Amino acid sequence: MKKNISILVGFLISLLTLSCNNSDKKHVHDPSGDEPKTLTDSLEKDIDEGHIVGMSKIGKLHNTQKEIQRIIDSIGTLPAKAKAAAAPYLEQLNKAIQDLSYADFAMDKWMTEYDMDSAKTDLQRRIKYLAEEKLKVDKMKEAILTSMQKADSLLKTRF
Image (cartoon, rainbow, N blue to C red):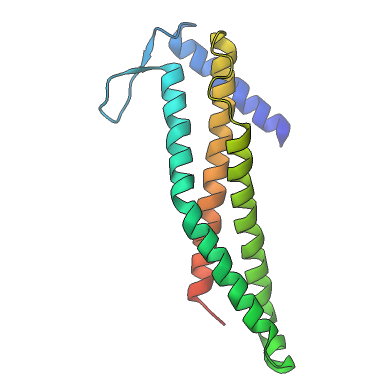
């Protein structure tokens, strides 16, 4: 898996380097209608947007974790027969808690490790760093959105 990510990052860097002709002065078209930006500006913008999407869901993620934990606790108070009947649902709830916890952890880890000033004096290293961080923030954002969607769906289908 790590090898695949390294290959993908290498490919991205090669593609980005070719598209900017080894110069940060070349511009990348911004489809949002804003003025064209440098490659590093575009990567920084993508990273920032991914971070914003993830952060906008964190409050709901925490509330969903609490709601699922409340249901798990409630199932724990049921009589043995009802508890046994709820076992498959309980298993799904526990998996949802794990997924939500991982997404929350991924956000915290990424935010702690991200260095927006990394390699500012070395363009090639900067592009490589930002490309890698974009992959990380995309993975983190996907973990948040996917775990939230699955948890919401699970809560709607209550036992």
